Length: 364
Image 1: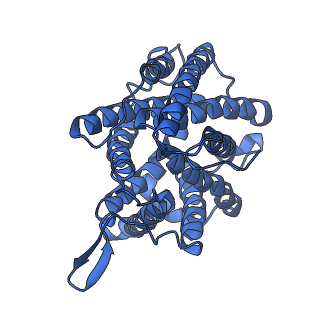
Image 2 (image 1 turned 180 degrees about the vertical axis):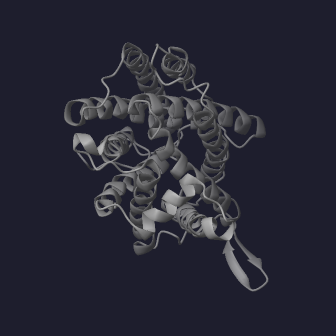
Image 3 (image 1 turned 135 degrees about the horizontal axis):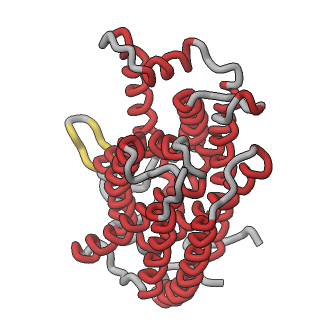
């Protein structure tokens, strides 16, 4: 049951299951640790949880990549600069890692807004679905992507966007007005810009493998995570010393500093919970770069899986931690998601036949 081949539907399902499980844990953890202390929750400040969650997630992702030496990437070409010899892919994977360093905190910040886990996921995931489709269009035009996007994939994009529209346009009295929130729009804008660059790079890497060169997703992941770690540690160092260096009393910077100087009594558990966020990174990248699939298809699988996880996380938060129960628009969104999944299933069957005929994958 668990033995699958590279590029097979079975392997894709396995990655999606892992992604779903760890995203549910991630979504529930956010609401639990930042819940009010008067209701029996840790009562962490949003910035505090962001710090501890990021540390835990980055620790597991970086540790695995280094321990297994994934950074020895299989390259199209080794280039020489002065006395240094390195894979040419590093020249664009490093910028992707810088983008990842922005994606990680903005993702957590979206969850910390006064909206349900499901709504946060819908908004972010719909944005990435659009980006993925645009990347395919660009790379087909450039001659980088040799495959066509099936009509079923386009239909799935449409229904995925309808799912997002439910939670962006349908604002009831008392709901969080996302569109008119400067903080929310700023976070989402940063997320979209860096993810656009990152998805383009991931698909450029996937679609430009030379004949006989293995699609080494582990190597891509490792270099990206090493870069992201360096950037985040550097940024963290500057933020920690900013109150003294720039003589500022900015509340967020002071809370960030306090997270280290006077850590919350449950900071260790928050770091531990962040391990789930780190596990999400593995499944996310490997789905995005799944062999033989378009960016549109892979982006839809990735994002729709997390959207369904959002429904599960919201329900768990409601029953266990007194969270918000999904609203009517959330359930309508879920219906659109399931329709999109139906179209993706049809597209997957067609793609498998195409890849098998071209002998790009092994079908048993």
